[in-house]
Image 1 (cartoon, helix red, strand yellow):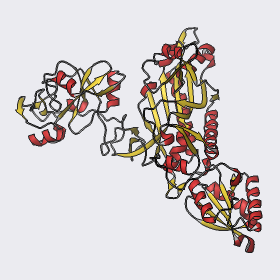
Image 2 (tube, rainbow, N blue to C red; image 1 turned 90 degrees about the horizontal axis):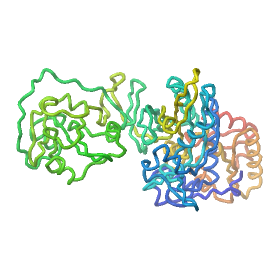
Image 3 (spheres, rainbow, N blue to C red; image 1 turned 180 degrees about the horizontal axis):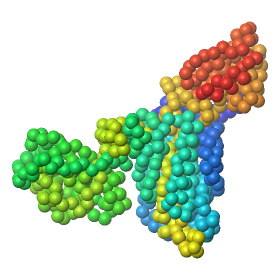
Image 4 (cartoon, helix red, strand yellow; image 1 turned 180 degrees about the vertical axis):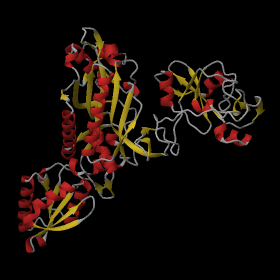
Length: 568
């Protein structure tokens, strides 16, 4: 490909709408253009990157026994009603009607479609295990699409679904996909971590997210530097603390605390550590109001709380709701005497002795609050946020925090969908059993953006060689010098014949403009054909990532470039 023939409209200025680096550079380097909020056209350079990511994904899925198919984007409401998700998935589901007034949606995921397909085609245990996948566009009606391809309304995903006879065989399929995902992101040249995560709206018993590590990541992860433990901060957990039996419980006492609302203010008032305060947070779920109890130095993990309650939604209650439920203004709620609403306590709260808590009346707190004696929660569970600096649950090492961009997630669905949708098989004894399922997704377009978030500098994108749109760009210094142009064309042809994907910048532009575009677009190698190429028989080869420059003989260039690329 020659630059004069290619659609690659680069920009010098950063578009005002672009907030994150990947969005800025994808626009500036001529990879994407916005059609509507959260909806983008992929230009030729972007398509080459996406196709390379897809090829890697296909090779790794096929290596594990995956079979590719293609499922419809438009899905009838009936199958979502049958699974029970039509009314609970939320406003992110794109809904539409056909001319006959029948309801459909644009698929954000394909659990219903694939389960119904297998329900109709698989009858015997002999037909499993089965790994089916597709790569297609997905749709999610984001309230506020942001960050370019990182949070769009239309995006490209790979979904693979596994179908097994039992949980033990599901474990095998799950491990196959864990290995495949590790290979995919390694081959894409990314630094990543698989982390324990929450399954969210898809459901399931176990799940891991694959996080590309980047300072701009939207998710916080905690990891141990001494072992392999890593988890999304929403999922991270620690063992329950034990009760300090050496401290005797004191008599409960109410104390006037005018104007003291926050845990820090209350702790200072009583001369205690914040960890000795019981923080009582009132939440509204889709079913009821709930009081969540954590230590004063902790925060409630709303994802954990939602899962413990089995709720669909959870959010902080308003001031009026708090007043009605506790009889006190916000800031004075406490577990003692709180009878109107359900109470969930974190394990750490149950280990406190002689703690301080709100008295459920204005300007008052209790001191010497002791769990079990003074209050009994309906549920005791891990509902708090784990923090960097705490001990690892696996080895006792120290947890550290990093930012990550989710590019893939694997789920053990179990029989969640097969039971609901009636996908069964006949076992060896002729008995009908529900099929055991897994779900495994990779955000293809998101992986392209995440690669840029992790690989860029002040001049532009620094693509890993395996997914770069082209491996090299040949730049003749002077388009007016026929000798340079002819040699550049010859080298361009040689490199492409050897399998080095090369583009020739044959524009009648100043060398500086061509060099800036090469750095902006992020070709791994820039090959400059100047006066020395004709007079001394050498050309300049610059590596984008390291900035290293080598002068290589023209007659050895193609082979030398191949060697350099294998080392990148």
